[in-house]
Length: 560
Image (cartoon, rainbow, N blue to C red; front, top):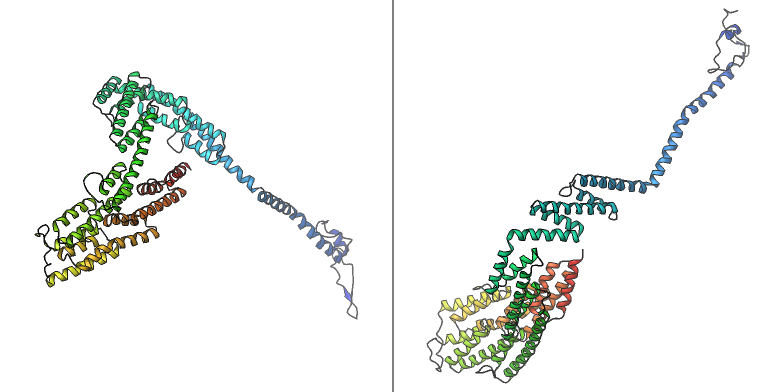
């Protein structure tokens, strides 16, 4: 039976298969494989189902570690996502600690400053990461103290250059203090010892005796050098007291001579050299009193001048005339715009009188009047026109004689005059009123009048320049072109120095410069603001806004 093959199932006559047991001896001889198939007692069909059911369980047992690992990764990633700020914060802290450690190492090695790996640079980098780091601040203070010690050592060995360099490093880190001041004074004394105190004092005395106060070789500088190195030197202190006395005497003499500008300069110098000079307050009060008196006297001169103009007292001997009064006002307040305008009005009145004399044939009187006007307003357009009229009558006309008939122009001369007039009109439209020389409208019209002194077009063009200048001033001011507006104002004051509109124009332009200075100060442009303020001071020195804008510029300078 052990050699029998399994009997195939038999089929009946209807095609059905009958089950058979097969070779039982062979079945019993198979080894036990419980891990691969069902027990032998199971049928073949049941054994197959067992095998199929066992396979998935085996695969599930093999995948569960991967699932656990994936869960861990997901949970870890979620934690990192929710705590990324804390993790990021660890990086600067790590960098900060590294910088502090390296800074301490550089400090210990004596690498105080001068490179990216120096103690100062590393501690400053640490403070940039954490401005509140007490360790970084303490490190910088240690560097400053080390530099101070280095300065003392350099001073002891006579290396003044190294001592100064180390001291400046210490000063920048420590911000001064007793130690810094002590080393500073020690360096100054060392310098002084090298320069020889006795020689400096002797030179200071000689300069004082010669009246030489200012300058690099003046008494103030020489005695100051001594006191810088030895503040307690009695001889040098006495010398500085003598300098103060000499400046005070000079200031009082300037006030007596009505030289207020010089007195102001001397007062500023004295205050800078000796801010605690005993007589300084009294001298300041004397200068202020002189200013007040001068302003009062100036205003009186101006009022008298205006009254003399209205009365027709233009010039004359003595002080009872407009010319003398306006000159006195200008002497009391140099550069005063109202006094200068008054002198322009005097010049205009003289030109009117000269034109009347020309019309009357009084060439001598006309020339004398025009010469007086030229001394006051040499660029006046009306003066140029009047001179051309006078010249067209012939330079050989005797005083008091009637003007001869003007010569007839040749066609070439007439054409040249026409060209000059046309060029002058174009120059005027370009804004070339007084400049450039030779090609300005003013010069071109005068060239035409030199050929034909009675040319109506040239005379009218010359007299129209003042009106055109006022128009261009207004346009430049509206466009914010203050420099061109300033040029037009200066041109008008030359063309028509007595123009009443010039004073108003001056105030308008000064106010515009103040607005610009204020605007520049607001934007932090201190240099531009100061430049604009200087222009305003020149135009309107008494404007109360000057002090306000100046204070605002100072505030913008100290802001970070």
